[in-house]
Image (cartoon, rainbow, N blue to C red):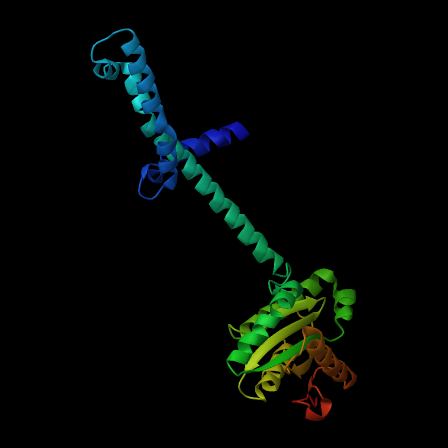
Length: 276
């Protein structure tokens, strides 16, 4: 099977016009340069041999030999062969690049929800902070946690729980702007890195998400679910750990306040809360 694939790849390259484009395919030039010494060396040897035999006009005599013309054609032959092999090489490089890009993409995505994963967020957090700093934007971290999610798995099964997570992730992606970063942090926890120029915008945004989830918007299973959200504002020299720690404290306060609400840190500056 491996040999068949090699043969197929070779004949595909033979029929590919790129294999013969001397201006574009640099491998053709490698072949020409590789084969170029052959006609000169063989012609020199042949002329020297004819001279030793006392043949008149040894150069003309050598050039009349079909074998010598075969050697003269070597740069062209090598150019064609190298052009074909170069096409195969370039196709392999494209395939490898595609695989690497796909693996890179998969390594940055959560396999269940399709959101960016914890690894991606950790690796890109600092660059996102610097970008917001250059634009003089406020940066907020929203820490979201589905309320009593264990009950969903226990009462309805893990498959239903997975559907709920995917539906919530889809809602988050729809609510987020292209430059916001929704992330599945782990389990039923999500993060959103939110940029804005308005101090209250993050709380309003979080409240909108809370209301939509509580209303069951976008849910494909009939399972009531609510979410608690903690918010922390990025401060100069914050690390991901310090920023996430404050957001986690705000989330804890939201849980202690009865869940299904939005709390900013510190609590005295709490954002909109659910009074249901």
